[in-house]
Amino acid sequence: MDTRQYIEEGRAVLGIELGSTRIKAVLIDGEGKILAKGGFDWENHLVDGIWTYSLPEVWQGLQSCYRDLTKRVQKEYGVTLKKLSALGISGMMHGYMPFDREGQLLTPFRTWRNNITGPAARELTELFRYNIPQRWSVAHLHQAILNGEEHVKDVDYITTLSAYVHWQLTGQRVLGVGDASGMFPIDIDRQDYRQDMLDAFDRLVAPKGYPWKLRQILPRVLTAGQPAGCLTAEGAALLDPLGNLEPGVPLCPPEGDAGTGMVATNCIRERRGNVSAGTSAFAMLVLEKELSRVYTQLDMVTTPAGKLVAMAHSQNCTSAINDWVGLLGETLEAFGLQADEGRLYETLFLKAKEGDADCGGLLPYCFYSGEHGVELTKGMPMVMHPANARFNLANFMRAQLYTCFGAMKLGMDILVKEEKAAMDQMLGHGGIFKTPGVAQGILAAALNVPVAVMETAGEGGAWGIALLAAYLGRACAGCTLEDYLDGTVFKDSPMTVMQPEPEAVKGYEAFMERYKKGLAAERAAVECLL
Image 1 (cartoon, rainbow, N blue to C red):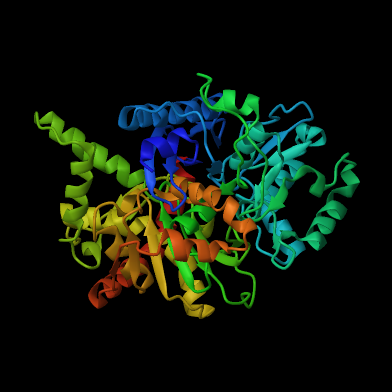
Image 2: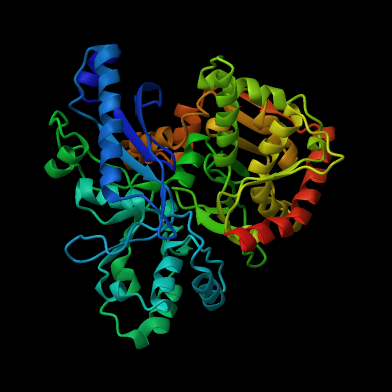
């Protein structure tokens, strides 16, 4: 069957992910082959001290992304996209979206990027004896309670971005276990929220007299392969205002970007790990056993299939380096020269390979927003270069790439050096890995482990959620998600693997010693200037 007929018959699968800076749509066949892509750029806003996106922006972005996809399908295959065999929605994990009984958002969407829940996170971590990071939804809810915010009494539903969109498309208040594990701790055996901790939270807030129990206002937890509702007529009109998309499409459980990144890199079996690098950076490793104790630098989440995962998360990654690349592009333009964005990134990233292993003594920080792992409530990008530093373009670009993984490495060092967690290989995905052999080699040096990159590295979570949607029918036939990925999607998938270079490993460790010492200067700058 040719691709045109395949799409016309409604056999294609669609995945959409709402990332931090781009909404992506990927249309695939049942084996994961990409048939078409669409996208829309957007950006969060700092409004009254809160990093947020408005709901109109969410729908404008989704509709624009879907429209871009359909135009490409029409242009390439001569087909008007009307039918789909399955659909999946993914989005940024964590954050706080509280709704009342009428479905009205009670506060602006508080994204994962906000570090405003410190007291709540500490209190819940102590209460549960389980690490509750600041960006988790329950931390945001409890902080609103501690703040005495009036809206809390009216909460009927709190959810993440992916579950919100899914709810509007299907009417179903459900969430994939991977994304749910970033709202509230998960019982691995039961694949549901930890009942003992739900009860503890309810007892804690009982004196407030709220008319809800926590479980009642959380999405219902589903695992990969379980049906999660179908696209309603209203949902189809929301996604496609032109009216071409037909309702009735089955949806997989909505998932977070961490889980879809794991699927997109085939890292859902024990001892496999992946690093997703974009606006934020996080490394995830599927564990063989529980950690020996609680670490505030490590999140405990799950794969979309419900396996235990340790995640070292950093709020900040590529925003600062994107600004520097843009500035250098403007410099070229000032001299009447032009370089397209792709070539500009590739040239500057390749220049980084010429830099010294320790970046010549340069020390930048990419903290656009706060960073929980280094005790920063606010961020301020900085570049420090001592007088004796070797300040040149190669070292500057290399240092910018090093610092992208710096905060994340602090958490991974705990996992590997203290917990002795087994890690066979890490896979990198995200736009930072598009230039071959640059960020990949730096990450291998940072973690001192082989790092692989697949040809689909730049597709990320949109492809991952499309694969989860394609898996829907196979789960009923007894095929595990791991077997589907290994035996169908990645069976012949080419990848490049880079081993850590000893000199680069040594240089990165030297950089990290400066990085840790220099954090005092970063904190002082934030305190004095913000």
